[in-house]
Length: 618
Ligand SMILES: Nc1ncnc2c1ncn2[C@@H]1O[C@H](COP(=O)(O)OP(=O)(O)OP(=O)(O)O)[C@@H](O)[C@H]1O
Image 1 (cartoon, protein in one colour):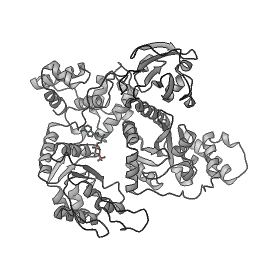
Image 2 (spheres, helix red, strand yellow):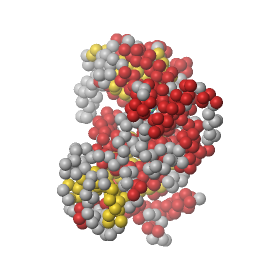
Image 3 (cartoon, protein in one colour):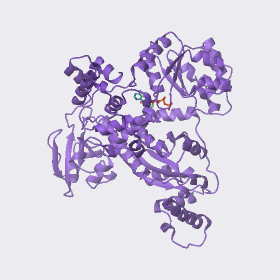
Image 4 (cartoon, rainbow, N blue to C red):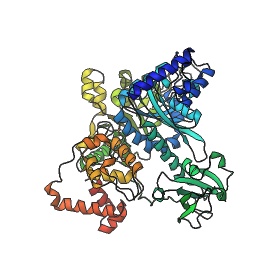
């Protein structure tokens, strides 16, 4: 209902604004002020709202060069993108990361909506800045410098009326805009929580900027609520000598300052004093008299890297968490790769096919060589050939085309990973087959063939045999790449999922004070996880964002569809077998040591590898 009323109002506002009809009501009573301001900016630029926006998508090659330049931003945003992705899968949305100009770097989400969004060019490589694409959440949030939701007809261009988008700019510790995060879905669906989710995710990302150290400067963490110190909801102020040089928005807000204070304000103007000792939590007052809890990390003589305010995490394990059969299958795949036999990894989306492929590479004799991953489904069909095989100078008309080596040659000495191989066009399948037979690549444009030496790993979520029968996959290529297949089972089919949930939580959440309650773990273990590990990881990250230190996350914080799923049957009586008792003792030791595997192994008097194998790969 709310959606209907608002879309009627927006329609009236559009009529008044774009058709210069009678001014029945002041426009700012019909649409939010930031939207109106944006419409006016677009009109002044001469954008025609009834036309199609002028778009110049980047080529896959240009996009990958830009994405590489923004590697740090993408890495810092990854945990939040994955947790928003879990939400997006449930609400039929896409999560989008852009650079500071509004160029889409990553878009991840529900396939149905992603396909519709692509029709209005809401996809990687396309610029959604306001000056080209009119009023839209990303572009307008970047211009206005604050989080903004743009629903349906509030978009400047008519075709964008199918979208409902919420975006927030991402600021670095110096107040510079480095990108924007956006959650977009169909306009017909009410996404009232989207802006809140995006805002929270951006606060976490901005907080993470401070993890990378400030070279001996003094980093002050502050909060009015002591329990929030050490969490992503704390404020941060960085001082060089006594001068404020970096901050996050919460920190500035708590001392009543804004970005203009950077480089100008001195500590004494913001707080009654700085705490005397490193690591000491002090109760003091802001310059305005407001009570605050503060803690200082690092100082004049401090080491180069800022000490984290949360307990030091155990070193991270990064490979996949696997059951014993899958670990064995991966071991066999490593032997195949070492013998130059191609390997196919099969599994539903999110089961960890790429992670498994990276693990095979890491364990193989080619670990010292490159791992080159190509997603055959995400590169436009017209570009796959040149991306893979490269091209000579002048192979194309147009000044931008310089010769390119191609990914097959870039994988030389290492592993080429062809993800979603089932989506490779038939003509290219023939070319690939020839390369595999002859072990040489001829670039487009008639260059001399070059010898290549790479091991081939392919992955698919499809039934390749059925594609062969349907005539869309070459049988000879199928036989060539599917000598040995690693089947990754869906998460719901794995044994002992509670152990997996706990292990993944420990991996993803550095702060050992944050834990899941038993009931919550049970619910998570019982759920069907259509998005498999990816969805589970996203959900765990979202729960971590809501968790408070020393208060185990309760079931009530779980998303509705997980709560609605039936819970697991009670543990089997076999729990009293010697094996089950051993594993239970190991789990308890691990919990007692805050997830630190080395410490737990020492306590039990067993090898670290034994503990790891029994708990995580059992
Ligand atoms: N076995 C696992 N252990 C821990 N994390 C995992 C595991 N499998 C997947 N993940 C996590 O889930 C996410 C998705 O993994 P990955 O991209 O490898 O899946 P995929 O099967 O290749 O997905 P898609 O088919 O959609 O490309 C990643 O963040 C990865 O770290």
